[in-house]
Amino acid sequence: MQEPSFLRRRIALLLLPLLVLTGFVPSASAADPPDPMARGPYTVQTIQETKLGLATLQEPNSSGAAPGAASAQNEITLQIRGALYRPSDRTVPSPVIVLVHGNHASCDSGQDSVTATCAIFKRNEAGYAYLGENLATWGYTVFSLSQDQLMMRQDNAKGKGMHQRRLLIAKTLDALAAANATGGLAVDANTTIGTTLEGKLDMTRIGLMGHSRGGDAVTSFMDYNRIRTDGPRYGLRGVISLAPVDYERKAPYGSPYMTILPWCDGDVSNLQGARFYERSQYVKGDDPFPRIQSSQLGANHNWYNSVWFADGDDSTTTDPACRTNQTNHIRLSGQGGTTAETNYVINNSDKDNPLVNTRISGDPARMGDQEKIGLATMAAFFRRYVGGEGAFEPYMTGELSVNADHLQIPASACPTSDGGIRMACKERVSTSYFAPPAERVD
Image (cartoon, rainbow, N blue to C red):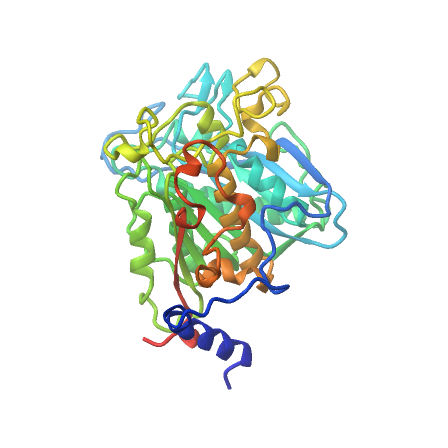
């Protein structure tokens, strides 16, 4: 028998066009969804460089060449490391979110591709601190995975590092599970977590977000996870591809899935993430999970990551609306302002201190328009599907568009920069929702 809540949702979605045509618009009420921008009651512990041991990877030899000392074809042993954001005062196991950044420079200085080391690592993973800290205040443990070493030895010509990335995601989840077990992980030169996470993680509630090549990697991992034989298969509660590439041509299924399209993307300018949304809809007819696509006008490829923001702009130059040298551009900002308190800057004099090297800061005052919209979208998704908070569902379905303000993000996430306010907030985000079979009529 179909659940009454499913019936109500199905009826509501079918009635949306009729309500608009008849002029009826729902009024604001106590049932309005919560604000995903707000911070929660938990205290955040941030460990800037968390090490979880070693992983040995090897990219398939797609070129046929003999492995060289610094080539993609040569085996590499790297550290499983990244930035950790956790609720230090939570007393029960927390859901787990793993963030996977994309392709970028590995080092600020001193790169050695033979040893896969840097004098100063770029720390690409620290650019999602705004998301990691927010979710940690609501009881989630967030691990943002570094691929600075991996990127020095990926097959850029053919494989693009996708094989290595899906294996590294698997090894990361294995390491987190081991850190959660009795005794934690023994501390050594490559392992620093010790017993910090012992008994603290709910490994049955896992979410993934991948950005750019990371967005392709998380969809690749979804397939790999279903057939994995060299370790456990993990139950994924939700997966996001943020501005992804589409090298592996996957059709994600088996979990709630969202793709995010930044419409001023100058890197993946043909918005390849839309292919995931389209291909996935009927790949498995009885798959009980939704697919969601969020189109975000004025966003570029890089500025969902504050480390990448500090390295410059990447917006498309073919669309005048996206070029910041145009008087009436509609670009979203990537920082809160130009003062020292509101900007993201590179300062390696104290590289792991977010008050100095502010590109790794999660301070809400530093967030620009783009991080705010990204945070609102991704936090709502994870809290709905990984955390099971049904109150966030209206952000997923697009049904908020029939409200009087037509906003599909909370007002707190609306742009405030000069370029941001040139377009009405209600036009900034458009949500496409492909409902589960029990909630749709084909």
